[in-house]
Image 1: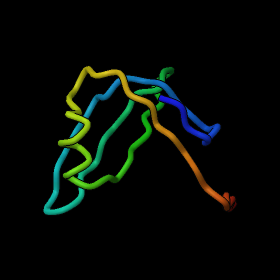
Image 2 (image 1 turned 180 degrees about the vertical axis):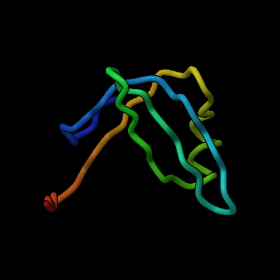
Image 3 (image 1 turned 90 degrees about the horizontal axis):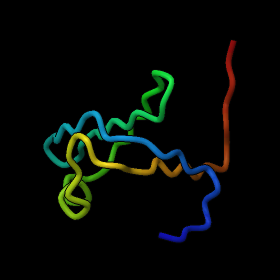
Image 4 (image 1 turned 60 degrees about the horizontal axis):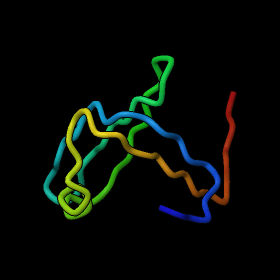
Length: 68
């Protein structure tokens, strides 16, 4: 897969939970860090995501906010 986004975090799917229209996919990227993505149920099905799969969290954002 080639994509323009540079923030790509490789990991392993550790959770897939479908909701009514949107689901949550949890990806373990190492060192105890879990990235959670909200994607459509259709995308979960199209990608055939299941626990144990290798996956990539691709982050494309124009703004990053920091608070203290």
